[in-house]
Image (cartoon, rainbow, N blue to C red; front, side, top):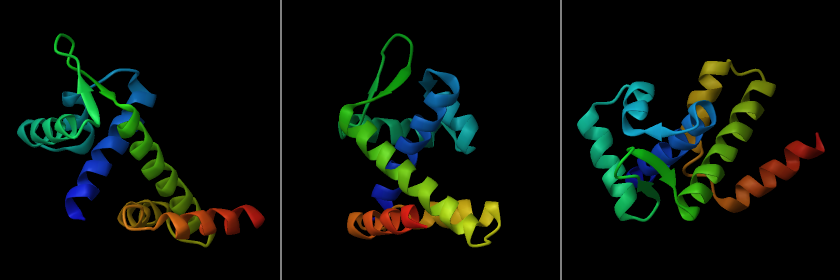
Length: 122
């Protein structure tokens, strides 16, 4: 699952950077995640091969495919819900964000749906 986790992290990061910057290139991910250019290049190639990201040959802009967008939004929604829930029960914001990032990848859809339903009732 570790491989899927890192791919989900990259997709989520592209989504977040797109919201901040508009257009995203690999170098933006390098700076944001503090990873090496070769590591990001390899990861973007894997995402492209899996049909989750498209890279514009001329501009270098990264675009999430429909499936990449779906995965990124799902992962980000889980992250935000978990982070906010942890904060609401008294967890420090930084710790809450770190823990949410760890859990978001392994949380089943069923548990996430029920957790979201529970939180909305509160």
